[in-house]
Length: 378
Image (cartoon, rainbow, N blue to C red; front, side):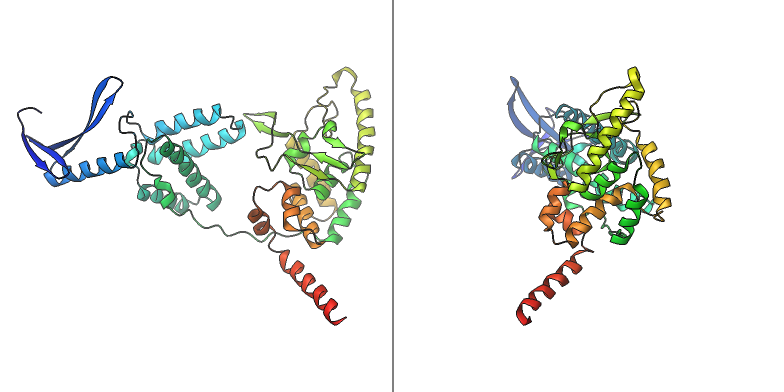
């Protein structure tokens, strides 16, 4: 730009050239080379504004020497970072689905440092208008927020613009709770079924389906009446895989009631018979709830079996996951503290427990008030 007219301003120097204006900021020595950052504009005022923004980003710690990249390029790098950090394959697959289906088509080509709150807000609005569920839209927002948070820590952006955007609110659906009478009817239908112990463990201990299918005999202390959740079973890229629990809270040791312990002892004897019948076909994974040849149970097969059982009990609405919710509901209604239920279920936050089972809390509060009043007035 030598030979072009230069004007000095409080913000720095602006150069006039044939098609507009340019300004420069000195970044110092990087890698043995003097580095400068140029900005351009059609008018002097526009160029000065860009120069001021550049200085502000530098003061906020953004690395202005980093190679420019788009949001899509950063998300690709971010996924590789998450994979190296040990993020579970199932979680990574979910991230990729959100990125490829929802984020990359709309914002993938936007320069990372040019992304704005308005762009993120419009993406969430468009997805909501297209009929995407509030849960999925919140996941899209959460992924962008987390990826930009890492970009901010690496000084690739001067702020996380997704934090300025409110995700859509979620209306928590009213959850139908299994009654004690319905639970007893279900237990009658389950009696003698090959997987009776699995369903009763879900109902009385509150394990998730993947936790039940990943449970091993050495995770259970039948004498002490406890079990420890150490692994889960999930489908990843079309095949079943063992994985560690997602969070530290999910990795937990919980008490098992005596009736369930007795069912597990009976189930172990039945499994010995399955093993003898399978002979050389038996594949020993040490699983408590395995197929007839020792392999992990196919979740779809488990669901089909469950659909028959729930229909026989007149409970067509009841999902396997609802047994976990029923466990929590019965615990709370019996006087267990929310923190105890949080530990049993492996929730990461007490707020999740309180929000999920808010429908039970009025009953607990009423029982507590009645009990206190009875003490007062006899």
